[in-house]
Length: 577
Image (cartoon, rainbow, N blue to C red; front, side, top):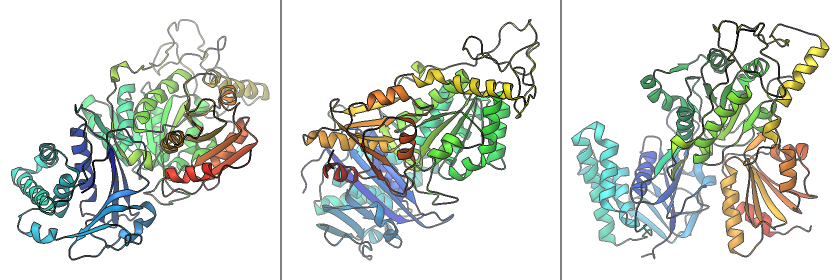
């Protein structure tokens, strides 16, 4: 019998089709109903069909932004391919491992775990027509954690309602048998529950991007299925037809981005979404959007590369591609969310920036962020500011100078068919009316104008986040999904009486040189945290900002997200200043 705990980590592993993700979602859904916070990450084998699955949950009374460093409970629906997840799982030696009575856990590091429990769930499930082992295990774990049984039953009913009464009843029975089995064996690891449960949202990062695009007024989406970004297209397909908006599954990524460019040129707010290999194919279209100055939002849910890489794991190695893909001088805006809520609000900001500055905006998410589910506080969506396209009002004067700045202001746009708003559109260098012009003077002036129109973003506050001790002389710096592990590492260090700051960048281009230099002015040691073996972020920082003399990279290849202890072990080594 364990004493009540503020948080717990749970790992569930099994073959594809065993119901690993369903069990994880049932636990997370019940936690939401009980007023708890939670986070669930998903890992799959990279095979097209079959393979193995792992989900890791972290449940408790406080919000979470990363997976637990160690799981307290590990349940194997089967262990045929469990060893493939060795790198993702560390198990608390005081924890519990559950396996079917007829199987043996096949994973190194489990011999020292205090409780290894063989459960005869196959025998129990055989007596229930339509019962499933994962639902039996749901009952067992819910009883172990002392979750509210009514909340569990409601979650089950909601999950299986569409499949009919017989399916619902069978799974309710399997749940009850699992709950009763645990009660008989008196196993308890209760979670502290809030005294006054409140309603919260449960979203993945990709779902949050979809919600943000709907709030921003996205009218058109074109994409091609690619892991781990496909969820965005699938989710939008549920909403766009109801709202008489257009979604196209294109034949490839280049077609997708050019369709989106065409839709935006026609007056629609347009978006496309992809992952690394698809983003590489979009480079040519991205250059067209840059040259023609057409608003566009491009989502890149990064995965391990290069080439096909590992489709189902995370990495932060598309930074250089986002900053400079497509040839020539090509100023664009690059944003980086670091949480599920950030995915929502920053997607709205991406559309606003695209419309205001008439530029493609790249939103760099990743597999760890896009595929994970979080329980988050609701926000008033109606209060999020939404920017409309600036259209030319008085078109009586002729000609219309589409590519000219007026006292530093960006010229308004027109929509094809507006009388007096005609102009040429070409991927070639052009003059103020859009007509091809290959002269040096014209190219120089247009290049400068395309770059300088982003100047207001360079001084806009709110994009550089700082946490921890304001007077600290050492700091972790990160971007994207590693922001969550940095915040947790800073909190742990602070609790131990160690002075450290965390700095997280959300606007990667254009660089905010003055604001960043001011933020880092007091730093003597800077720890650069990133999932990139080439240290892309480390070199990015050196390229644009004034850094301390002591800059220590904490950089490695992706595939496995950072653990908090990885950062703290480097920090505690205390390099000489």
